[in-house]
Each structure stands twice: as structure tokens, then as C-alpha cells.
Image 1 (cartoon, helix red, strand yellow):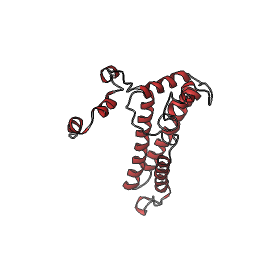
Image 2 (image 1 turned 90 degrees about the vertical axis):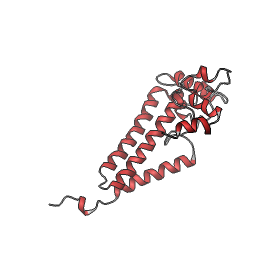
Image 3 (image 1 turned 120 degrees about the horizontal axis):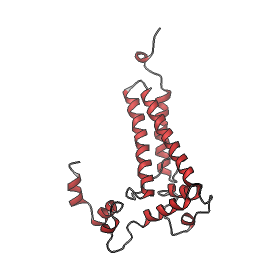
Image 4 (image 1 turned 90 degrees about the horizontal axis):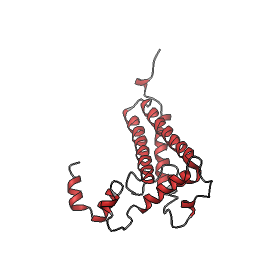
Length: 185
């Protein structure tokens, strides 16, 4: 926290500061009309046009136009889901990710070791953070920084990392508890 003011004044370039400030006050950040918030605006239009049930798979106006929404298979997959499948599908996606996060935490609590608990809580927190940032990017409340939606976005390194992290959680789940934690009769 102490380094943030130094980094803001000396390390960040003006365009980087503008990207961070863009979701919060687009008029003051973009007085020249350079469209700093263009991607977020296109994403919000895609989410809004999907309504409750969506336009149908492959029938979205924003997502199927080549220049309207960039990064639709990686950064803005949540906007694609919202436009083509609707609010109901968005809620289902969020519920599925919430179930994965809760399951990671439950496995951590039942692990029987501090190290296993920290692994599970860390994986759950990482998935929660990625989900919050990606959905926030699509809704225009966080800056567009290129974080994928866990288990839904296209990307080899993201998927590999997530599955490796879930493998760690599975390893904690199936590891036998030490004798000192077992109940003896």
C-alpha cells in the first residue's frame, strides 16, 4: 500500500493511468474522445441486448460482428454468454463458479493440515478474484486488464494453470489425514 503513490506518480505512464481511471469517470479521463472505454461499452451493450433468455447461440449482434467486441473468446466470454444465452445462463455460470469456490474452501477446512487448508483457500481465492475481475470488466466496473473467466475462456495457459490448481485441491482432498487427526475409539 505504501508503494502505490510512488508507482502512480513515477512508474505508470499516462495511458496506463487512464485505463485504470476509465471505468470510474470516463468523461474526465477521455476528454479528447479517444474511446478508452470502447471495449467495456461494447461489452455492456452485448450484455444488455441479451435480456433474460438471450438471442440464441451464434445469433448475437455484438458478438458475431467481427469488429464490435474484441477478445470475445477470451476476455469477454461472459458478455458473449450474456448476449447469446441471456441472464439465466450468466447466473448459472456464476453459480457453477461459486460452487467450485465453496467446494475448495470446504475441502480446505476438512483437510486436517494447515498446508492443505492454505492450498485450498488460495485456489478458491484465485478463482474468486479472476471471476470478479472478468465479470467486472464485462460490466464496466473494473478496468479491462485481460484476465480470463475461469474454466470458460479460451486459453491454453489459463486452462492448464486452473486444472493444475484443481489437481492440488484434489490431492489435498484424497490425501490421508495424519494419525493425530483421526478419531480413535
